[in-house]
Image (tube, rainbow, N blue to C red):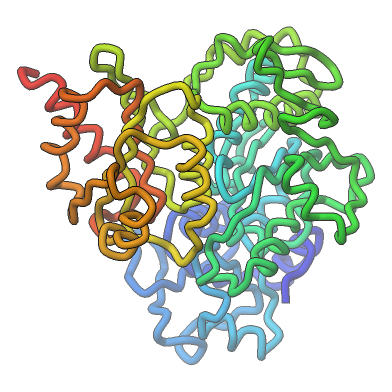
Length: 450
């Protein structure tokens, strides 16, 4: 079972030998932190980790040092044999987030959602940092939370994945945010309900002053759930606590009316991210005047609806982080309906229906669609039925650049949007590698002499 983080100090004092399951970035951070406390950690991983006392996870309990505490890395399956055996023996199992929460002395802002959580985490950190310079972001993005426990910080702004939340008990944050929810990671969670329940663990019901922030769309899905925290809602329609006025290019919150005219990231979905970030920053007691200025200086994150090149009047957007159809739909809806765009999508599709994607593409149709990767075979027939005159298909992304170049040279486009909507694993190790590969090849053709 998982124990509340206030019990961790007691257990560590009683049982200084600690098993850290998983030798990735989080596991190594956990090991290093426990070492700094003069405890006796050891890593369990399928491969040796240089510089760390590592045991193969194939040996299980029979050959491991005697331990009563196990710290689980988020990437490890809850059905890992060592976890199953540890539960049988009633060993104490904690997450890295539990451990860090017991030691961190600053204030915590926590953010999750299916899409947009990295951008919102970075944006929230950017805003709060202008008022409180001793602010850092981490968790599922960048730095493990435990690393912040060795620093004197005012705020930690954490992106938390469903894997991290599933493993953790109550997170003592002053404010939390769930941006949205769509079918994702069902290979881990089994059902959408399990996935949603993992996300809902971000709400700190134990703190009466905790503020929960979410979108109007997600809030509607919570009508059967008891939310004991104060709740702030953001959205486009009338009523939410933070709402967008497209005509005036403003966002109105309970404390201020902010102009977003100089906000750099493109797309309506990024304006919704900005709504969430402003509410979180206001909960952190940031001065609205400081926030107004800080909005203008946030440039966005790489691979997330990133404008990286221009050709005449055409902007090239790299949205390689789009790894499911929900994020692709958000990108398409984020484009104005009066612009001409060329959509490049594909990769390895996830098991999800295409009805919402097709609806979005019918409402804001691209001039042409290029379908690449495994999606060209798996989705090909459905796209041909829906968009027979617009569709181009190429099996591998590496073979697509002649086609892409011919489009920008022969057609008038306002945007060329690379937003795959599928995972990168059919051709690449991760979405970063895919995005870098795409941008590198486009830039070579735009600047052949460089």
